[in-house]
Length: 82
Image 1 (cartoon, rainbow, N blue to C red):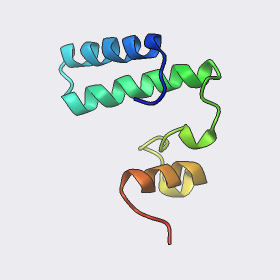
Image 2: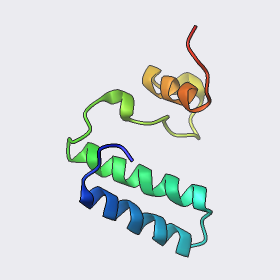
Image 3: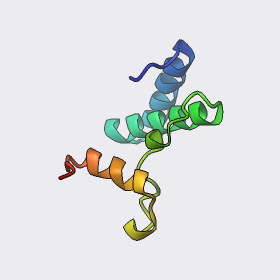
Image 4: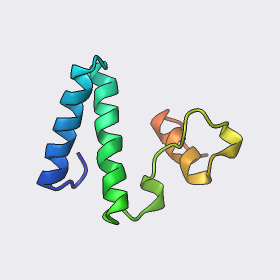
């Protein structure tokens, strides 16, 4: 985990367990928990870098996503800039 506080780590574990109880896969539960913690960190202004804001809404066309969202998506997919 990135430099999260103990509170963030507890929240992550709680969210992950909750998602697993609702029937989510382990991978999906981890994603839900991480996104939730990151959202709260952004709202509390503890995560100010725009590049840490994720890959955007997967239901939105690539053409409508920001440069930073596309960059993060490319990193996630292992695509390196030329």
